Length: 286
Image (cartoon, rainbow, N blue to C red; front, side, top):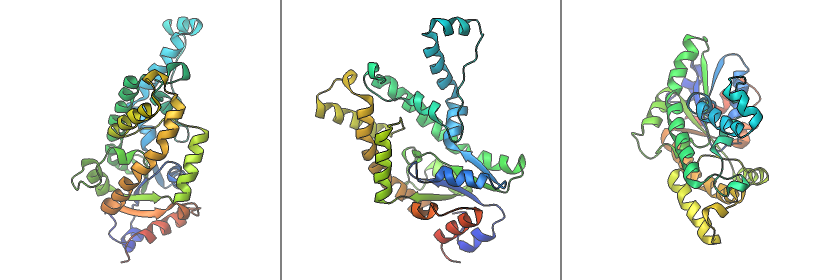
C-alpha cells in the first residue's frame, strides 16, 4: 500500500484513494464531498466509461431510436439536430439505458446476443477507464494543481480484476498509486439495496460467466424461451445473487490490496477531517 501506516497517511502532502464496493453505500457521496472542498480531484470511473469509451455507442443508440420517428429522421438526415447523452457524475442513466436488460423486446428487453455484446463493450471500457486513473492522478497535479485525488470506482470493479492474483495488472497499477478502500456493507445494507433495486430495477454489468449461467438457470427453471423472458423480472431475480457473488471478491481486494471501512462509519462522515480520520482508523498504527 502507498501508505504503510496511519502516520504516513496523516502526514502525506498528497492523499490518493480509490473507493470500491457495492453501489449505494457512499462512494459517490464521499467523492463529491471531497471534491467540494476544492483540494481533491474527483475521478469517476463510470463517468469515464460513459463519455470517453462508450459515448459514441450511447449516442448512436439514441439516433437509432430517433430515426424511427419520421419527424426526427428528417432533421437528423439534414444535420438539423444534434443528439448526445448528458451524463454527469450523479446521473449515469444514459450508460445504464444503453446496457439494457435481456429478454422480450416488446417488454423493453434486448436479444441476449446483443445484450452480451454491450456487456463486453462495458467490460473493455471499464478496464481501460481503471487503467486511466493514474494518468488522471498526474493531470490533477499538473493541470489543476490539486494535491489530493479520489477515484470513485464502479460497483463492478471486482468483476474485471482477479483479486487473488498478485500480478493482476489493473490492481497492481492502481495499488501503486492509490490506497484501495473497500466500503463494506452489512447484511442490513444488502437487504436495503435489494429492496431499492426491486422498486426500480436498473441495468448493470455482470461477469460474463456468472451472467450466462444465470440466464440459463432462470429460463430452465421457468421453461421460457429467450424472447419470453420479462427483462425486469430477470434482473430482479439476478440482483441479490450478483451481490452475493461480488462480496467475496470485494473482501479479497481489501485483504490483498487495501483496507476496509464500514458503511455505517461512512454515513457519519461530514467533512474532509472526518474522512481523513476514517481512513487513518483503517490503517495499521505507526
